Image 1 (cartoon, rainbow, N blue to C red):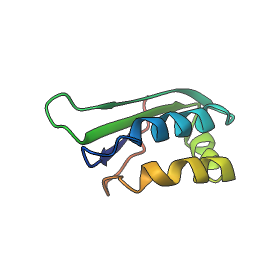
Image 2: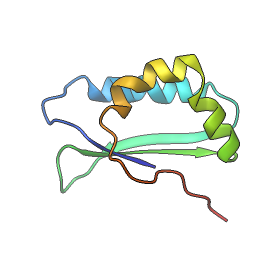
Image 3: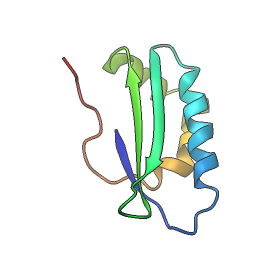
Length: 87
């Protein structure tokens, strides 16, 4: 999960998130992903992805197409832990 602080006038942001999710969906180990803006706090978004494991997630992040698609999204990332293991 990645929280993102996005200017409320960033009209292109939803399309950038969609492009990133599309790039991630093409990587081995991807199970699901979605994003949304907080109802109570405009400009605060959450990007949630589910993977077969941490290794698949980390390998996906190193793919060139993911780096390119992710740049306009991750520039807004809140600096905090974003990878969680679920039992």
